[in-house]
Length: 235
Length: 382
Image (tube, rainbow over all chains, first blue to last red; front, side):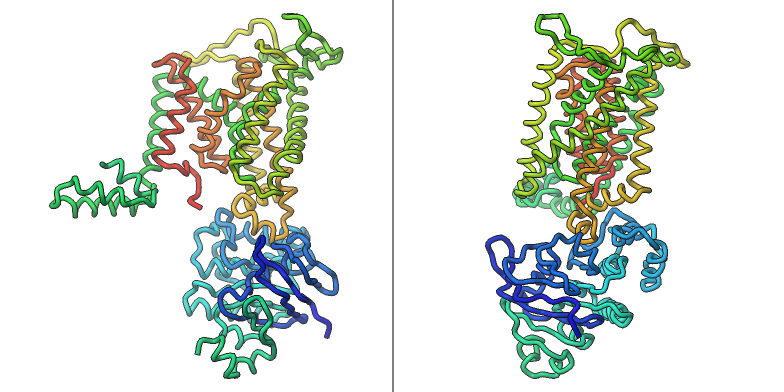
């Protein structure tokens, strides 16, 4: 199976500081991939580099066979890839409905249909369409951020630590939603601190440490591996 | 003492309070800190309520006891509103205070002037040069419409000036601000750059049209009498309706159209707008286009109400910023209300103090907002 997303030898960072020293990952269509690793491993940086938010000094990013290295985010979105930042991922003064409209900004056709489809996945949001994004609780905000990213019916959804600072109960329902979205056919690239939960949902996983690939393989195997548990799952 | 504590609410330097507390007798200290905590828990709500109460009281009082000045204040406020809405819109998207806004407003009014009259300053003092073509040459272009002092020539001139200022604003962004964005310059650099544009614009107007005041229409135009002893020129009523109409149009754009919603989204969070697929460069171009058009109309209406003078624009900076900050920076509907407050306060003040102090009145309003509620009436905390 040819990969949907193929990042090869990514070197990137912020300004002069190099964080990623040649990281490679691939995601096949419909797959759920977890990227785990300790703090400062470069997980979030990897997503930003793939999405064109920070420049790649070396390496290539291919989406569906097309080179998208260092393209601007608004063009990458148009290719069928969505990204949910870790924080500040909703528009606080816009209503829920407007937040979703912004998510679907670049495509005019079937807007109402897509809106209803997304509301179908997140019925809680459907009840409060007029409320502003800033009024939502942390968990609801993450749901809205996910919903916004789904408005373009992406083939790949990239999530940056969606469970950060959520209550355990919220985390569970959020992961349920992510699983549901993945089962419906959307590939998911999930960066998580919450490694156990992420691994149990995923097909495959990558472990990053100090800006390099450390391990990769089947998520379930990794979950059972003593080495991974000892080094990265905090057991 | 109270003042220090009040400031500590917004300032991290709360050591002030602790050191200052030693001057309170120990037995009051507990109840004092309790009071202080309660006050802090209220956030800036008391400031907001106080501000709204002041505004409503001012409007009601002025409307009842100073009806004439109140009405003129609303007219002046209408002109300020068009400028302040553009200013706040640009601030919301680009996050810097555009100090050139007053001068570019004036440039807009002069562009309307040259289109209408085709006149520039001559080589000799007091003798103007005619460039040969103008809207005035069209038959009936200067015949007053109804009770208005001007004809359709000025309306066309203002519309064309709006278009011209939209294009000039976009061009200025290309040449100046876009380069600063690419360098990731801080907001101070942007503000200083805008000040440079302000000076250059004023100098350009002085070169082309000279320092003497000019008018769109010569001759005397009588005001009409209305109930409650209000005396108004029909031109002034026209000014109000144009400003109000454009404010409504801007509201419809921002809250009911895709472009406007994207502008609000970008004002909220430009990075998230970008990852949502919104072409933020295009939004910036539209923002300047709308801001520029509003500038030109505001400047032209000011010239209808007062006159054209190259240095008139710079004096507008203070009331424009006062209006925009009062409404909450980045909130056009707030800027509209803020402009009305500034306009009415300035006009009513001449009943009590010399008209020469009008700029000081705007300054007082600015100080008062910054003390009571720095984020303004509709501003957000983030």
